[in-house]
Length: 468
Image 1 (cartoon, rainbow, N blue to C red):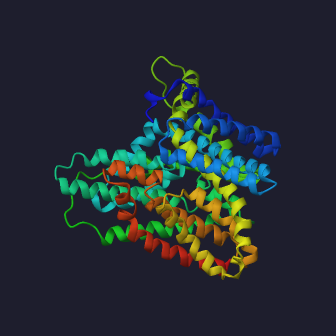
Image 2: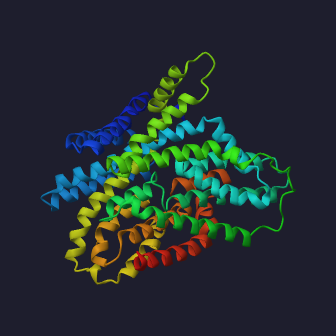
Image 3: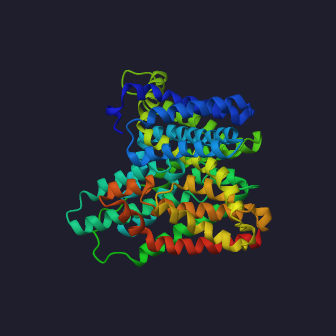
């Protein structure tokens, strides 16, 4: 939604997700149940208000959630507790999205970050894919799918000056694919991503610290596979050589690497020292870093830094947050439906006599790599798919495998979905910037990549189940 088209009541409603974030941070540090209850209530109110004016495909998730509540009330005695748990899950997802949106807002107005993106987009043809896919990964760690918007916009700006239409189309496609795959690889391990945070919360015995290193290996694997496929399918007709980029990589990437170091090391340190879960560390640290970053940016002429920070904070709450109303509703409902749906699905599966414990663990591991991208083709958000399916599975302990192996399988499948599903924000952004359909930007551009990367991730998850 355009910032200029936000209704006044929606502007005030931006206070609700901000309040949810504050309450859920408090709950993560104190485990004081009334804070979670209040946060869930504010999140529900935000969903009700933001649902007005949404297109039918997203409003349908709200109706599905209401139907699940009715189903639970009619069939289970403890439906109220299950609904409260589901609302808390949705509130936590909303709070995480809000916190990460703060740092994305700070990045979009940083001259150093924008110049870093332009530097990557200006690389010579033989180096450009590698630069943008690594850049997509680094930017994606901080900006999530905002990295596609930022780098994609800068990339299309650079291709607009190419006079040959065929070369311009080829160059735009390769640059967008590189950015997409770079972002998708972050979903394998990033402590700031929904993929790792949601997966760790639903897999019994899992932790980010145990899954991070195997997840980084997964990310490296899919990055290398993407680069190899690009090298194999490099177009015959290339753009005319441009002037060589003379800026030093260490200078241009320094602001981004410093920001990444502060955030990632800060999250890890906070997690280690306080014992708080990674999601709590992210939600509490990231907004503080973002506000400090904005304070360091040059304020408009005639404004003090303090006034500039205050103005940006007000604008974020009253203008930017309401502009994400569709994403806020979708993410809350994905967490809510997944949690409540799993509560209803587990006894249903047991009642049907389906015993997943009888399946070999390697089949379950391999299936998780592929089920998530397949359900993504049907419009199922990965948060919903993971929250719904994982509770039905036997625990890693019951399967005789380490939790990290299951986490790697799930986050690997999540990464494939992020590169191929025509319903994800990352693919939709790439399609809009590349001027193609979401189906073309998803499975069309990345179908072969998904098969190759999925095969490698399956073997890696199976290997981990043996060696860990």
